[in-house]
Amino acid sequence: MFKNLRKSEKLRFALLAIFLGIFCGRAPFFMGVFLFFGGLFFWFAIFFKQFWFLILSFVLLGIFWGQFYTLRLKQSDFLIVFSNEIVEIEGEVVNFPEIRRKDMTVRLQVRKIKGKTQKIEGASLGKILLIVSKKETINYGDKIFLIGKLELPRSFSSFDYQAFLLKFGIFFLVRQPQNLQILEKGTGGNFFVLQAKKLRDIFSQNLQKVLPLPHSQISEGVLLGEKKKLPKKIEQDFKNSGLQHLLVVSGFNVTILLIFVSILLRNAGRFFVFFGSIFLLLFFVFMVGFEPSILRAALFGSILSVAILMGRFSDSRNFIFLTAAILALFSPIMIQSDIGFFLSFAATMGIILGVPMLQKLLIFLPQRMEIRTILSVIISAQVSVFPILGFYFGQFPVVGFMANILTEPLIPLVMLFSFLAGVSVFLSEVVAQLFAIPAYVSLEILLLVAQYFGQFRVLVIPKNMVLFSGTIICFFFLWGSFSRKFQEKFLEKNEEDS
Image 1 (cartoon, rainbow, N blue to C red):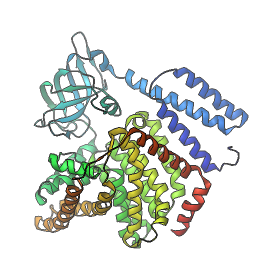
Image 2 (cartoon, rainbow, N blue to C red):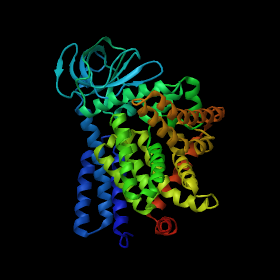
Image 3 (cartoon, one colour):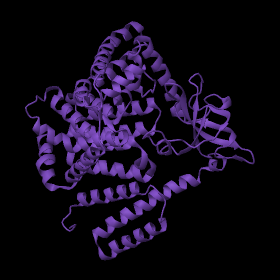
């Protein structure tokens, strides 16, 4: 079966085996068995020169690594002995605060903890999620003291809160602590992240000067990844219309922006396209604080933009598998429980494999202004994430296709003119207002589309439809990844056309 495989095909099989193995290693059971047989089949592969044995060993060793990583993470958390106790904690804020409707959350790296019977100090005792009032002035890098009850996260409805927090290495939380004190203001944390925070705060204030509410809030979400809550009605409209992902920086948004910038710089040559794209990626990563989700968005976005603009869809399959395998090796928790990873991965795979097909089916559409490409990207991404949204949330915005088709081309304009308006405030508020006009117009159109399509009900997806559509999407991904006929018919021809 594997005798006639090309080297690139063998690489994809190996990377997929590692990824699937780590994904399956969610619970630590029979770890020694997986390690023993994984090592045994690895030596069989070398001795008998059988590729099948190598793939099997990668799966088994991947399962072991996923289990071992999770177990090691739990064992390194010294907070478990204080579970459900009222404790005194000293620690350092390690992320930008997330403002929610009724409260605010921050992740706290614990340095000292004192319970009823014992006290522990150390550089890294574990992380907790701290839930406080929105009135608190806590920021990244602050060192704080608090008294509160150390609780296990409680899942609600269909949302597994424990699995969600586990991707940050968090096993416990403290709600509304007593005697909260800021010991040192902004003295901890990474120097570059602190500078990014200061710059982002200034930039956010500039946007608020030149744009009214809720337009400034939306521009901050799209451009800076700010998680400020919109009015409930507007937030619900974005959710019902399938446009909620536009309110935060995502891999999809980064991809659209990179395509837009590359189109503008295409006549200047690949050198300017490359460095222009790199500048934008670095800007986003710097401004939003090096969050894992943003780093992942930049990574997937860069892969997609190169694939779409250069037409190298065939080569991009190895890049996406390599990226997934590397992320799995360094952070198994991410691929085991992070819905953001699954959405990004599915959308990226869908675009890489779906865009070449759709561009041929939509040949009747003009390619001027990359209309056919952008439409193909939107449809491919929406179809690919449908089963995941159905599985995790049980619903899907029926009008999401049309709403995204209308609004995605606006996102580069929103980001571009919001950026220019925010920067030009440093020079002159009059100049900033000139750039704010097109930013306001594009944001207003985005709001109107969200409000119109937000009137429609979301589609409640039956489990059998989720299973069926998920199976179809998985088979399509496997077919597009490993079928030579698919490669010859769609990918290679697309590369020749480019």
